[in-house]
Image (tube, rainbow, N blue to C red; front, side, top):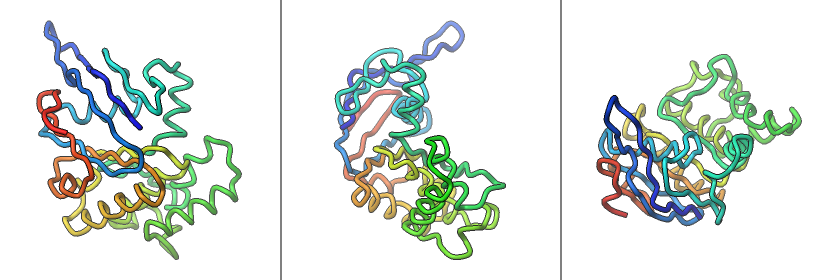
Length: 223
């Protein structure tokens, strides 16, 4: 379980302070698909960065299974991100000169997993998200947007993470492909026992989520 306690993140803008996240508290149970929604500037991307340990809060705490992650050393934070979190981005962020399989293999390399084991797991994960056959060896530029996002999701699952953090996962996809990707993430939340947290302004995602948190001006206005 993720437990957020009075979480705040403040940035300085000239002589002023901007509270991008302002004393937010909520809990997310394990193994569900949830959404964080809000307009541009509401603080949802900042919140996602804090949950992903890409930034440290100004105050408050983030507890994962009872452990305060903001108190971890830099080295332990790196390990936490590598082992516990998979990231899915709006722009896919795939390595253009690597094949679909090689992109999914990459995160496992940093854990010291053998090449054969990496390849076997990558192909299995890609099969689970609907990428198989000749597409396994295609580079991102030879795949459609929906196919690239499927590869991105498989890569996020590479190290068997506890959480997947998805930043506008359907932002560059047409509505039909977006629905397929959302159903895929919902299914993975159950079958892989992975908590999926999607930041979005897409109403179809929030309607599909088991829990939805709405932000406005850095504050949580509904949960």
